[in-house]
Length: 322
Ligand code: BDR
Ligand code: CA
Image 1 (cartoon, protein in one colour):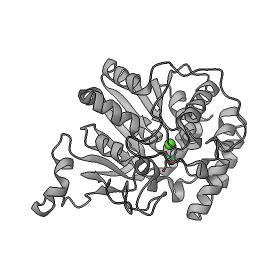
Image 2 (spheres, protein in one colour; image 1 turned 90 degrees about the vertical axis):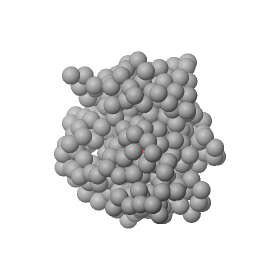
Image 3 (cartoon, helix red, strand yellow; image 1 turned 135 degrees about the horizontal axis):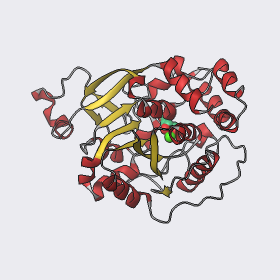
């Protein structure tokens, strides 16, 4: 049976690989790709999304969205992905054009017209928060909302406390997490360690000798260096493809729990931190004041993915690029 996806992305190098996975999945119809500012400014991210769609030979509408967070100044991650987000190899812009309507309009329409839709977010949550502010009732049409974001174990990649997508626009993340959407949180920790695409994995992909596999590796060349500088780990880490893998096949999430989650929006030290109530103490009377907003909604708990079936995820990724 065909499943319908809406993908929101700040398209840079790992987003592009995640888009390829979805666009190549036979059982998935990608109804729309909406683009948000994050890794790179939204115009560049839109151009990267269009390039990726064209490379896949797909016909999917791409909608350009928010130019920056709801309340804050945009901070981009060109330091991680390269100036163009794709490793600065001079990819020629696609001939395809973005649709004329804004991403937020498209999100509301597409979700309302496709009950049971699955939303996958790969960037800051600005577009989705704006859509929810416009039409809070749209949550009823959404079967799953799989979010690449957060650091539930509290090892951040942009600050010690926070993961990039949530840190860029924490107010938007808070709106989304409080919206009642059935959220599945795929945190940054899942793309580290064994999940990193090391030399053997890279050689295996390059041996496929096809443009998609080549693009997946090459566009991540700057990200590979940045990840080494950041963590000391060697290889390509792919947070968005991990998220997309779990969106495509939920059984790739090897262990999970349902927890209340709050997003820090006040402190500068812990801005964008995803505070996970792992031991279920948020409902205690002593915590009620701080946690009321997270608890008093339905469904209140977020599905937090704690571990990944790395081998099967890598197989899925390789087969998407074959
Ligand atoms: C997330 O931030 C971006 O740099 C990646 O594309 C991914 O969505 C990882 O923290
Ligand atoms: Ca991303």
